[in-house]
Length: 253
Image 1: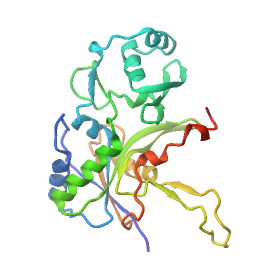
Image 2 (image 1 turned 120 degrees about the horizontal axis):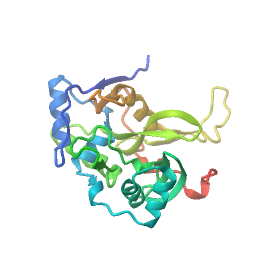
Image 3 (image 1 turned 90 degrees about the vertical axis):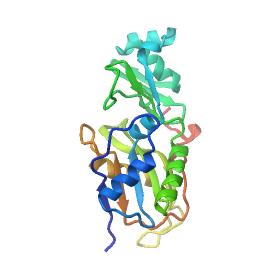
């Protein structure tokens, strides 16, 4: 029977700017006696990628502008944080007390431009963490580095927690990917009864991110890397950017 296995890498250290993520992963895999196989996929929490890339800012270094101050009044947020959000964004999509949803410069529609302080050590409430500069490029680089160290290039997914406009709660989605089919187009295939599929497309990278997030957790679990095994090697690799809907197709703008 087809099956997938998901294995969290235990004992992962707190990541610091400049850390070699590929080496940290290789060390934890060796400690758990795990050897990479063809088709394996590693899902990484966004935070460890951002931390390794040094994507920190200090609120004390940020001078909010007029728009940030106005939005801070409307949302009840720190105006310095709002300015950091605007710096990472191209558009304010929705706002209300306690909520600021924006279109990130990478195309994601998300709360606070993905800027977070949870599980960010140092600096008390002054230090914030941004998304990676280019998550797809980060995933590709990590895939190459692991291939050099371990002899096999795994698929890579960089996952973050997103809310959705019509559902309560967050779920894991892919903000970066390499070596996997992030977007699968089944249009033209047939269903069980031979009918041609006309609209069936699959956010495969998001499905992987969501599955891994069950093991990763959202609080103090300390399991930021999950190995997924059981899928065949990707035949048509696509980056996570292939999942972003073009603006002219966005019916909810």
